[in-house]
Image (cartoon, rainbow, N blue to C red; front, top):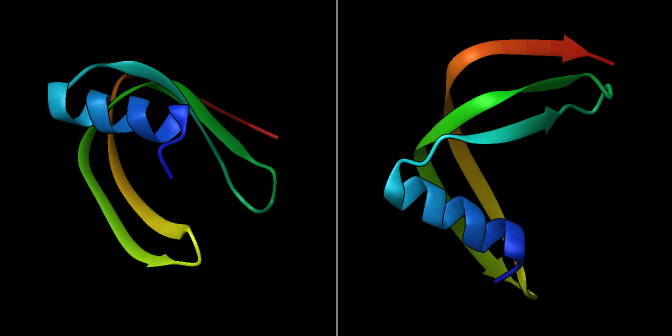
Length: 66
C-alpha cells in the first residue's frame, strides 16, 4: 500500500495518462505497450494487503513474449 507503483497507477488513472506497462502472467508471458487505465479498483485491506483490478486500453502496438 502507498507504494510508488500504486501512487503512479492511481495518478495515471485519475489523469488519463498514457504510460508504458508490462503485464506478466503466471506462465511468465508478458504483454508490453503504451496503455491508459480505464478502470482501477482496490479491495480487501487485510493484514496490510490489497487486491487491485485494472482495466487497460492500448494506445498502439502491443508486444507479447516470454
